[in-house]
Image (cartoon, rainbow, N blue to C red; front, side):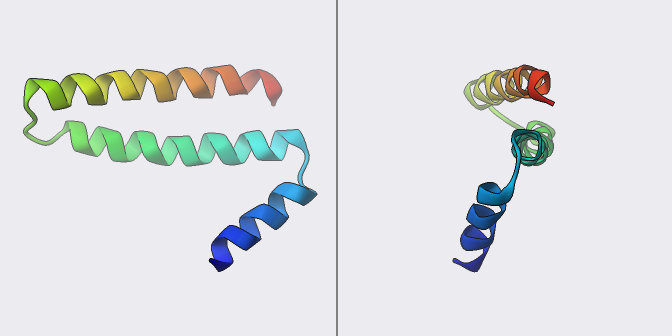
Length: 68
């Protein structure tokens, strides 16, 4: 709960570049976790879904970089 409140306060006081940096950092953490997941023994459905999600996350980061 406290973490959510702190994040909301940070967002209220932040400029657009700081918000984008926070989004990119969070998405990068998700990419790392997804890469760890992909290193496990997966069936074809899981692997396909994870690869599609990875591409989406990478695309999101690229699209956000124009706001930095």
